[in-house]
Image 1 (tube, rainbow, N blue to C red):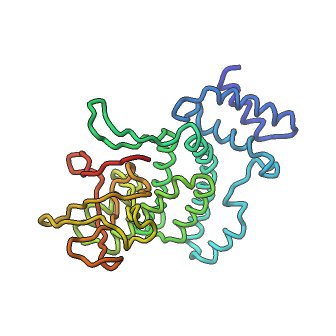
Image 2: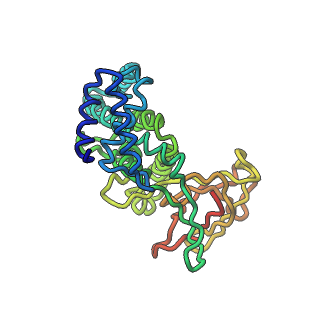
Image 3: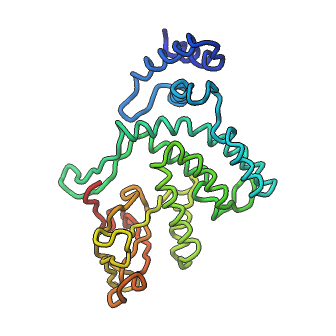
Length: 311
């Protein structure tokens, strides 16, 4: 059966699942199609096939309801949002969150691939033996990340929502996070780090840093996105950052940081990181620490003196 005919038949029987026979037929076509998956996790007719695959695989856990929407089915959550947002904002958010929940079906299958066959890899050296410290992620993860950030999950607490012409808020941002974390917690971690860096820039950075970096950290597609990271933990202290040894040395109008960070989530994907370090001569413990904004790359595109030892 030609693939477009199989897909059309599949979508029809998923729309009208009247018996176990049709469900098994759908499963057979799906897994035959899924054998064609590429190394990067993409399928022919990707979105429709992945959506259908998720629905068939989860038919029983959904109570036989193939049209379940994680947002629409969570009445307590909806009621909470209705009471927390003004009427105009909720009307917009209600539609956006329902659409976002539909997309999580696809995010879930991509996350499964990322967790198993498509795990991130450290590319330590290039063909000439130069340390490039790049992190490879599969195409499905890239697509999910791009789409999620374009929804404004990290951006709208800091800039106006075009449809509303007013700034968003953290209630809506964390509502998106609640839905995303159910299917792709591996991505929601970097999202929260990006949100943290955006908050630090917006509230504490001087005007020059804010102007240069904040538009990138809260980008929804208009400029290149700089994901965020927070490099705090070190091996000798763990959760006790007061034991940190990374030092900051003054060099003119900037600082040079020397040290090693541990559990550095989103390393290699971040465009900019908030990093704890101790300025020379500062006191011991947490009171002697300062927070620095560190770009991952220099203006010429080269690494900013940063290397990744291992994942």
